Length: 184
Image (cartoon, rainbow, N blue to C red; front, side, top):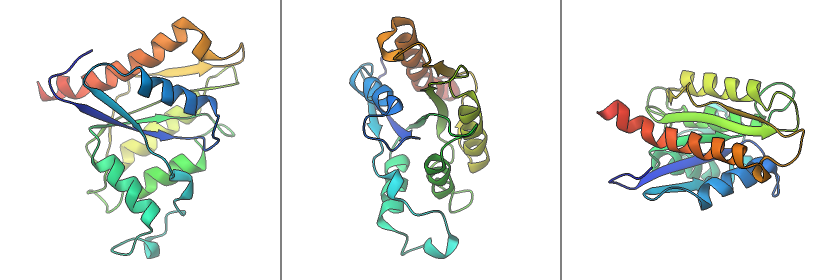
């Protein structure tokens, strides 16, 4: 898909491991984004302290401020995440908490949002993605429920599977197209 204006997609990673499968998926999306689309993997969300209202405000930690700025400057938000114990990783949940504040005005408010990813389970992270969408919706994001890529990685690396790669790229295309449909 191509667009008339440059669209920025902020990617929130649920895994902080350097070589994680979901990081590699996010980097693949970044490297193969369609013309007119910039995919920025937001780094450092694992260094953001757990949300605490006493830490927030004018003196919020630099890591939280950087997270908010990265998402505020994006047109869309994509969570690329595995599943930990049947839900989203704490690092992703914490990022959404910080992005939801101040209430009703957070950096995620009004942003089209989707959650995708892969896990080495037969369910592909479906609960994690469902919980991330739920939390983002409560935080004020415009969740695109039609984007669902819960990729089981039990049979190997989904980035070596052409059909799986197409599903990830189509999810990105659909997220990019979503706002155009809303604005039309």
